Image 1 (cartoon, rainbow, N blue to C red):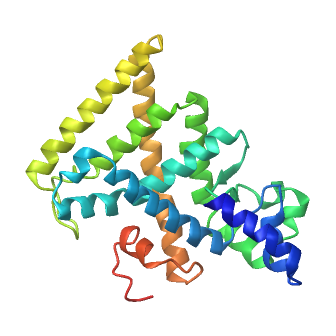
Image 2 (cartoon, rainbow, N blue to C red; image 1 turned 90 degrees about the horizontal axis):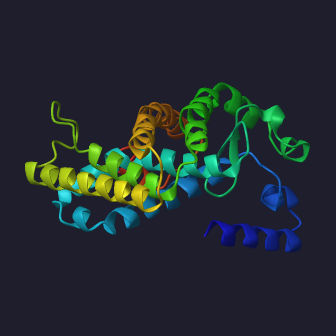
Length: 263
């Protein structure tokens, strides 16, 4: 979907006189993420999260309120995992890549010169003052550990399922969506154990040496993911509060746990 939109923008470049409107999409180099990018990517990534969760047999067996609660709690982790894995596999340093190929740079001055010319002073200020801490944390706590581990797709999927169902472990406090039912918690625990056993069977099938230690390192990455997710959500809240990004109703409901009525 992202590729199709980029190709459409390139076609528009050939027929429109307003080149500044889409010239950023025409670049083959790195470009800083626009607020339109952020809105679109977040919407599509959260839609893909819903489709992925519904493909899990155990998820469809949970009570509807429990499924809704899990998706709302997991949404920010989904964004961190998807973008973190995409960034880790890119072998590009000092940027946090978004799913459509745009990025949040650690330092705007490190972007290619052609890309820098398209960054307005206001957008540069926001990146350096509002999003820099989030960008650093996402790169250092998520993308770099994934890159050092050379995280495999099977491990990414295991992390996603563990984190999704870990979002149902809020047993000591009640948030605005209440507690997960005991039956759902039992099903989720059983599924997590099955997924971990399946990952161990995969390790054995590829004759991976010392795989318990590797799995331990995969699990250790969760703390960095949680830290980055907190920073990411804070930045998204700023984008929403000051109407920098026009988030859609799906994002309002999932990421911000809102009914979208204030948009």
